[in-house]
Length: 292
Image (cartoon, rainbow, N blue to C red; front, side, top):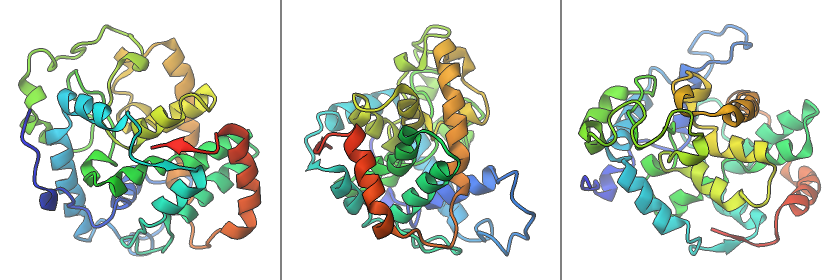
C-alpha cells in the first residue's frame, strides 16, 4: 500500500465545506438567476481552488481498494463513540464553515436548510429526515480522519477510474492505476453486478450508510450512500456496473441533489422552533442510541 502522507499534509482545504462550494462551481444551479461571479460565492478567484485541487491530489492518490478495506475494518466496528442522533448533530456542529464568503452557517443550519426545503416541497417524512442527517458522517473528521478520507466526490475502487471524476489526472499516482487486477473497465466486478457489490471510495457517505442501513427506507439509504457519487448521478460514468434496481433508486439520489447543493441561503433557520418536529421525526425512524 502506498505510504500515507503525514497528517500535517493531509488537510489542504481550509474547511470541509470548501468541497461543497467547489461543487457549486462545477454544477451551478440551472434555475438560479444569472449573477456576476463577484456577487455570489466568489470562490473561483480565491486560493481555495488550489486547496481543493491539492485535496483531490491526496484523495486520488491514496483512495485505493486496499485503503477502503482497511478503513472499513477500522470504522465499521462502530466502537468510536455512542451517541444519540442529537448528540451527533451537536458534535458535528463543532465543524463551522469559515470559508464561505456569502453565508456563515454552522453544520446544523446547513442540514436544516436542506431538510426544510425538502419539507416545503411536500416530500415524505423519511426524505425530510434524510436531508437532515445526510452529512452526519462528517463526524469522521472529529475522529481524526483527514479531509480527503471524509469528503469529496466518491467513486468505485477496484476498477478503472473514470475520466469523468474531477481531476482524473491525479489517479496516475494511485498504485491501483497500474494494477492489472483493477485498471480496466470492470476490474474485479461483473457487468451490471449492482452497486451493492461495488466498493466505493471511503468517506462520510459510506460511513453513515453503514450506521443507518437497518433503520431507513431503501431510497433514503441510496441517497445517503451515493449523494457524493457525482461521476454517476451527474456524469453517468458507471452505468456499466449498475443494475435495474440501482437505476430506479438513483432517481431519488438525483431528486435529492438540488436540495443539497442549492438550498443554502443567508437566512438562518430557527433551530429551536424546528427542534420539536425533528425530534419526533428522529424518534420515529431511529433508535435512541447510535454506535459510531
